[in-house]
Amino acid sequence: MRRTRNAESVMSQLLPHPDNGPPLHSHLSPEKRIEAWIELMKFGDVCFLAGLQHRLQPGQDALSAARESYARYTEAQDEKLLKMAHRFGDRHGR
Amino acid sequence: MVGNLVLCALRHVAELLNREGIEWAIAGGVALSFWDHTRNTKDADFLIAVDNRSVDDILAAFQAAGLRPKRTPPVVTVGEQRFVQFWYEPPEIDFEIQVDFLFAERAFQQRAIERRLPTSMPDWDLKLYVLACEDLIVFKLAAGRIIDFADAAALLRANRSLIDFTLLRSECQQLLLATELDQVWHEAFPDAAMPGVDA
Image (cartoon, rainbow over all chains, first blue to last red; front, side, top):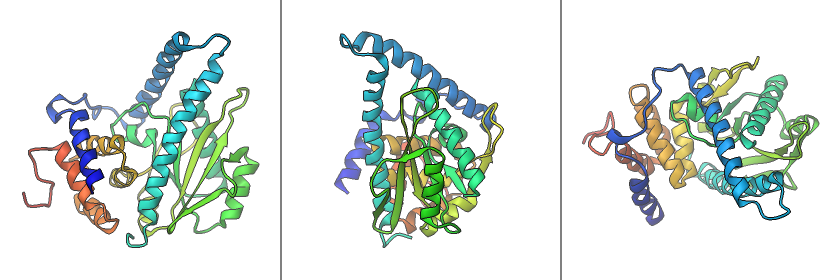
């Protein structure tokens, strides 16, 4: 419970007030919103690769650096999945 | 780079699941964007129904389609929940993408599969399925990280007029997530009571 409260207070600092939030795309169809997500992912890739050029160690190639970065991402994914499984797997919940 | 590979993995797995006649729904970035919360997330998370097939048959079909189990044995059991994780390597690049499958074995998850919504991707000639907004919020609350709570709050904000709050509250109560829902609602709408709840 304490953990949830901590998470809540941190989220208060991260989540903008409704009046200051990012614009919504409610005028777009769901399919157009998915297209926007694809574009965002592609743009994210471009930014990631640009940043990578500055971080590469001598002799390190972009692909292996991307693998390392993705490995960190999947660690966080594993943690999330395990947490979710614990919650859903609780025999008291239905 | 990774974004394109994730899309390749999503397409490959969606084709596989449809071909195998397995009912499924996406719970990652596609679902978030469908519900008007676009975030640069590279999850390939699937909820899959396993009621009409044996898990061994499903795993065999996955492996025949080029997916490699992340763990040995592949299936992880947590309480009454099972999941499995695979690696998928898109053609012509030496890079593996993780694909996670949560088995829809609990009553809530089976209801979520029934409530899933069809959608499509540009230029993909196949049907995709996403979780209903209420169910996606429940998933986010169950995931429990700060970023997941922020996603849930954003989903509430973006879909306030569409959400069935009676359903959402009922599912959260059954999964012991009512406190988390109330907290996230308060974050999303500090000055308003949740519909159907006295202030």
